[in-house]
Structures are given as structure tokens and as C-alpha cells.
Image 1 (spheres, rainbow, N blue to C red):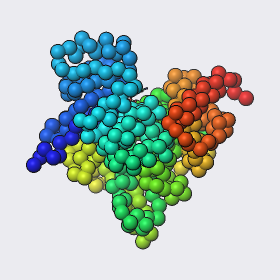
Image 2 (cartoon, protein in one colour; image 1 turned 180 degrees about the vertical axis):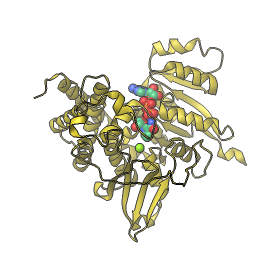
Image 3 (cartoon, rainbow, N blue to C red; image 1 turned 60 degrees about the horizontal axis):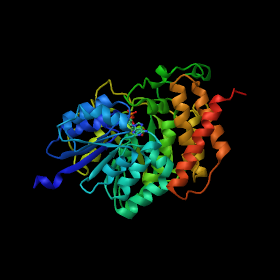
Length: 392
Ligand code: NAD
Ligand code: MG
């Protein structure tokens, strides 16, 4: 009976790049998915359009201004407007919800990701910052509740697809995490000093939100993903090889002891991992173009340069020292990337200030969400302070 396949879905961060792609996949399969709730933060026009089109039971807005903005547009259509961060956790954990797409950007997504994990949902995790900040707690919550954690980040989705789930994992030699290298890959250190936000967000293969686009350009994204992979697949950093692959056709690979390497490939389109997560273990149409195996298909590889792109090294150091240090790095990076996008900081200063904040705060053992949130706030304050200081 087809009804056993029906899932009721909350999409958190529906107005963003991953959120819009998620609604695109959901719209292709009205026989499978019911939309329970959507949330947005800034682009409330888009949220209103989505609500009118999909008629979810709830929309979540950040504040009363947002509520007022949507109230008239949604009047009489049966969608209820909820306000604030607690409402995000509520629609993630609601008993009627099967599946939660966590597509908020930054550590702002942590509490709703945790709420979905604690409530035992199928958690489609795009919000990598949740795992970077609170990997211990999120993985423990998943194990305790029996939640189903499916990675949406394309690399981790690829690794998940290439990896056995049982005792045969003993046959794994390493994981190969591919990176496009971003739009600044071939620039000299001198050129990097003059990079503008427009140059940094112009990703060659993927169309994404601005924060993750800057992270891709600095290789911080790959660093965050390395930490994410350690938590998701119970790996140590030395079991992960970062490989530059500019075409983003191979989304990542698993290397086995017998010499086999299994890769997941496709056109670079987030609807593929999103559809995989939504329908798992089934396969459904996603809207992605099929990959053409013809002379235009190039697969080239290189090693990352940690001197020109120190954020990758910082992430490796953060996960090696462990504890709260990844949360420190993530918070500092959210501040420095926002400052770079506002033209208040040069591109190389992102890594310089991230490192300075890491050195100032160091690693503490992780105890609680409250502790992590206070570490996050302190790291943001130190990064803000460093923005005001003249360079020495
Ligand atoms: P985006 O900037 O396009 O969208 C972010 C979403 O989060 C929006 O809906 C926004 O309204 C919401 N949001 C922003 N700040 C918020 C806050 N303080 N509270 C609540 N909601 C808030 O970002 P994106 O590119 O869609 O990325 C979303 C997440 O997915 C990020 O963690 C990113 O690293 C990850 N991811 C994205 C892609 C991609 O292709 N875009 C790929 C892999 C992973
Ligand atoms: Mg990725």
C-alpha cells in the first residue's frame, strides 16, 4: 500500500538554497510527501510565496514583525504562523512529523537539529555547523532516541552511499573527501589579499548560500566537512584524505583495504542528495540532469594547499584537540565571514582572526548545550573585538 511511504516533513530554512531545492523535490512527489512546517528568517516574501504554494500547517518566522508581515498574506488559507526559535524546535519535534530537513545556516540551526534528534525523527542534516559545534551531543541524542540521521551535505551523502553499514566497515582503509577548491583555487597569496565578496561567492560548480560559498573559497567548508565526517562515520581525522577535484563530479569516495575505491558521482545538484535522504532507501526522481559520459567529462585531482588556505589546517587542529575547539572555530568563522561579506575584513584575515580566537580560547571538555552556546557567544565576542583592533 502506497500510504506506508507517505512522510510528513518540516523544512527548516525553507527560504535558503537547500530549503528551496528541498521544496522542489517535494513538489515532484505529492504521492509521498506532506509539508507540515516551513521556516524562514530574512526573506519573508519568499516564505509567504512558499506558504501560499504548499499550504503547510505551520510557518515559522523569527519575530512579531515577521508575523505581522505574513498575517495578511496568509489570511484564510489555514496556515498558522509561529514565532521564534522555540517554535523551530517545536515543529521539528512535533508528534505528527516524520522527517525534518535541517537547512538553517550556522549554529542558529543547532537547537532545532537537536530537537529533531531527541524526538527520534528522520533528520536530514544539511546544517553541518550543528555537528561541528555539538557532535558529541547530537550523535548521542540520535543513538538514544533511535533517530535516523541522513547526511545531506553532498560529500557525506556520497560517503554514506559508498559505505557499508555493518561489520564490513572493518574493510575500510580511508575516506576520500573531495573538494572543488572553490573559485580562488589558483590564486597566489598576493591575489588572495585583494579578493572581493563577489569573487569569493562565485562558485564554479554549485549555487549555494553566501556563507557556505565563502567557506568553500577559503577551504573552511572542507574543514567543517572533515569534522562533520568524523562524527557521522566515527572516523579519526587521519582516516580522511582531502582531495581537490575541480569538476565536482565525484562527490566523495571510500577506499577499501583490498584496493577498491567506491565513488558516488553525478552532476553537481543538491537535489540528488536531498532526494536520496527524503526517499531513503528508495530512489526517486530529483530533477537533477543525468551525468553525460562523453569527452566533456573531465576528472582531475590535486592536493589542497594549507598555506594559501589555512582554514583547512585550523579545522584539522580543532578536531584533533577536540572538546569545544571546533565550536570556537565555527563561531569565529561565522563572524569573520559575515565581516568579509560586509567588506569590513580582507579574505586572508578570515583565517588570521579565526586562528587568533582559537588560540585565545583553547579547548575545554564538552559538558552541555548551554556550555557550547556560551562558548559560541564568547568566541563571537572575541572575533568581533579582533575586527575592531588594528592589524599588528
Ligand atoms: P542559505 O543562506 O541559502 O539559507 C539559510 C536558511 O537559514 C534560510 O532559510 C534563512 O532564512 C535561514 N536562517 C538564517 N539565519 C537564521 C537564523 N538565525 N535563525 C533561523 N533561520 C535562519 O544557506 P544554504 O546554502 O541553504 O545552507 C544551509 C545549510 O546547508 C548550511 O549549514 C550549509 O552549510 C549547508 N549546506 C548547503 C549546501 C548548498 O548547496 N547550499 C550544500 C551542503 C550543505
Ligand atoms: Mg559539501
